[in-house]
Length: 101
Image (tube, rainbow, N blue to C red; front, side, top):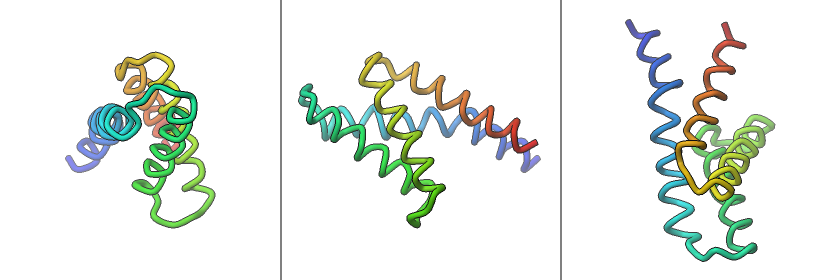
């Protein structure tokens, strides 16, 4: 039963929760002003914190997670709809799981 719940968390629940926190709350609360500088800073900071929440040491894995966070942040600013981010995050987790299997 445990592998099922790990799978369900990593593919279904984590993208929803993480996108609500990092893009829905973080970008809208701390980087509310819609200017180019604030958008770039918001994407960079949310991406770096996203990476740090997954890997707590500076490494290539942290950089990969941070880049994914930046891509998801950019997608949120582009579409202004959290459903796109959640879907992209879901697809990334599902593809990485398929590559693992």
